[in-house]
Amino acid sequence: VKLALATHTPDVSPPPPVALLSGSFEQRLEKAARLGYDGVELMIARPVRLDSAVIGAQVRAAGLQVAAVSSGPVFMADGLTLLASEQKTSHVASTRLEELIAFAHELQAPLVTIGSFRGRLAWVGGKWARKHLVEILQSCAESARQLGVRLTLEPLNRYETDFIRTAAEGLDFCAEVGDEALGLLLDTFHMNIEEADPCTAIWQGMAARKLWHIHLGDSNRRAPGQGHIDFTAIINTLAELGYDGYLSAELLPLPDADAAARLTIEHMRRLGA
Ligand code: LER
Ligand code: MN
Image 1 (tube, rainbow, N blue to C red):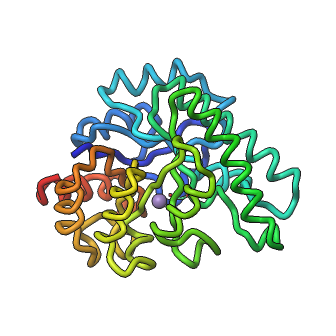
Image 2: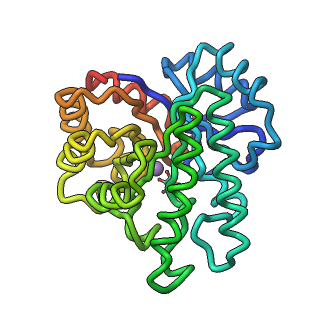
């Protein structure tokens, strides 16, 4: 199984609340490689402030792959969301998504994540909010497809979103968008709150051939093994169904950002990942 961890690029400061490892960007890459990670999920806010050739070279020099480009900081650091109360904000956010897609392409990253960056229906209001996001994602999925990049929609728990909380709801939304470049990202922390059974959610995503990325976090959003999620069951289900994407740690830096990264890989490897 390919393991990655989420860490921020130099355009993001302070670090997002679920980013791992301490030190400079290059030090964090080196630490990830030394711990045995295969890849990094890059949490990016402003791709235009970064040089993809430099970032790509730094990641390769550490012997790592870019597992994903995360849009999380576009919301967390810049307050931009695809659905927003101001139309201008929504427009700037869509443009930012196009930039992230182009950046992912330049880095040869397989996908861009869309979690809290999608915003909330209530911020737009009315029946057309959902339709608005469908249209934005149709347009961005087309750009992504042309560049050989994929987009992954992430169901989130009820305290962080007002729509798309389960894999089933995520798959319905993907069907509504109807582009082969749009699929799902399932986060074990969110699944633990919203799904009747995380393994069933994984099965649904795999059956639809839409499960392309997974975020790891335990029930308390600490490293796997520090809460009560059954990661053995999750790993066994993924193996049985032939999942070949990344398991990417996106969790709280507790007891500290380096220890959380170490505890994650130790636990996952011990379980056979
Ligand atoms: C937020 O809780 C999360 O899980 C991120 O992946 C989405 O921005
Ligand atoms: Mn997540």
